[in-house]
Length: 366
Ligand SMILES: O=C(O)C(=O)C[C@]1(C(=O)O)C=C[C@@H](O)C=C1
Image (cartoon, rainbow, N blue to C red; front, side, top):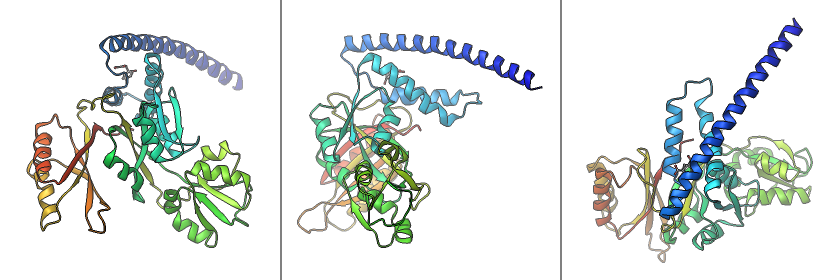
């Protein structure tokens, strides 16, 4: 019996080897085609990275997937394939909040695949700066979290940046308590990015009520500090934990089990004109209105009149000397190539004291 099973196993593995070789041939054929596309783009002086095309490739495959491969596995597999094909056309330099092991790095790799040139930055301002200065082709910044809301620094920098949002990507964020020794005893301070501390405040209040909460520039920086001092613990990903040789003292300590962070992919508009309509797009704006009765109601009325959905509305103080004035960050469903969206935007703009389109991009296909 054992012999027959061993033989069956060996037979199946031989077939897997043969399929892998066929796949390798097909992948090389695909890579050759991408290289030809790359030559045409070089000739035309057009851009290599086309998020709307990548989104369409993934959506098309999901639609035609007969299984047993799960649809959720399609995007990560094809992102890696397209990343490798893209790298044959040209290197893609991507800036994000580093160091190695941050959720921003995970988001950048999840979106662009691992065949990129990594440009880790020490804070969100540097990601904007490095991308605006052309030292990176793209910047990946956190925009909002499902527990904590908008990332204030990103929202403030989006207001004045010359960069455009060309894509979005979101990540399930699982926080862990990590430490050089495997116990909760004697922890004097917990080091993490302020957003992570906020996303775990319930767990910290219950399990480490007396430990100091110490905000640091990134969770990976917290992990680095915790590796050097046993009185410290960090809140970070398991990836950062293995990077710095830390114990997983408590897994998944975020207060919301479905905690997600949404990231924006930024680039210079002259480098990369807005992606064309993919059929499932978002347009992000920031606006302000004069402080008068009914101003907010009038602002959003054109959206209702032209049947355009608003998926996000968030305010930030305008820092106008204590005047209680605000900037409003608005996400609309659709692309300005769509007549309804174009008409709504035109009317909305007429109602605003300040109006800026942050970008139009395909919705996350993960
Ligand atoms: O279709 C293209 O424009 C390509 O360059 C090919 C390809 C791919 O591998 O499918 C690679 C990079 C682009 O971002 C989009 C798609």
